[in-house]
Image 1 (cartoon, helix red, strand yellow):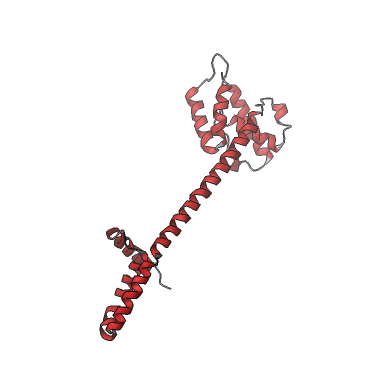
Image 2 (spheres, one colour):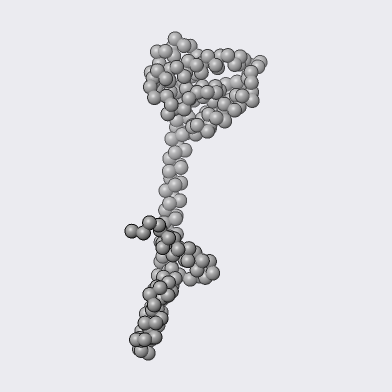
Length: 206
């Protein structure tokens, strides 16, 4: 086996140059010309072909061109591209529906700041509270960095303490609005669900 893929890459490069100069040419036309040059076909034809052979080749070439081979090839490529687009749209719609459903569920969850209540929470409840605090508190670890209940509990208690220290009131909503906005941006980048919770979180300060 050759150590590099230069042969195939060279062939693809040649096809790219060929189709750029002749955009209406078909793939089988390029393949025929490439094989004609590479296999010494011209020399073989000059040595052995008769007039009847030339006529046969012309009829065969006309039959191939009339068969719509390139049209079928391009249609297959188009159908494949459309199928990929449809699959991606369906996947995006399902993802958006799941995010909206989860956002609706999270909208009914109340933010808890009582340490005694927090210490009695289940893992699922801790996860929900962390997502509620993430848009308004910087420094909450990524989900992948919290692998057990103890780490989630520790992160949530630290978030609650930091949240209380921000002196958030109705008269003075944000002690440091620039810092809090940065927390919103960081949180949204970590999870798409927070993009929907962000607008709900702003109502908390009104």
